[in-house]
Image 1 (cartoon, helix red, strand yellow):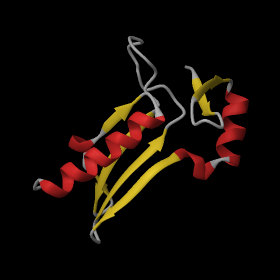
Image 2: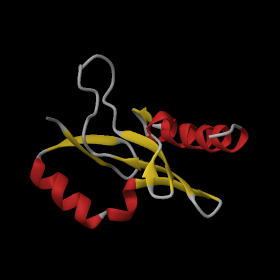
Image 3: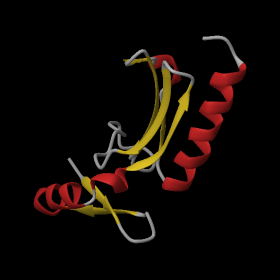
Image 4: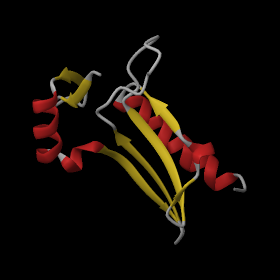
Length: 104
């Protein structure tokens, strides 16, 4: 398993488990890309995972994820994954727009 941290330019950098653990402790707030509250019960959250979720190894590492939570429960049908910070920012906004313009 390859682990990643983010450099100062928000680019993923592979690392060992020791550096990964220390970075996560020191940079807890750096893992959130965006968080948008939609009313009192719905949250769209996009984060840096730090663990490659591209389990088949074809294509770039999947290191970012957007999820929608309604009443604290994940709405899996709205989950989206990305390889870069920039992709995850765009994907977050697309999810917010999609979720607010379409019925759940």
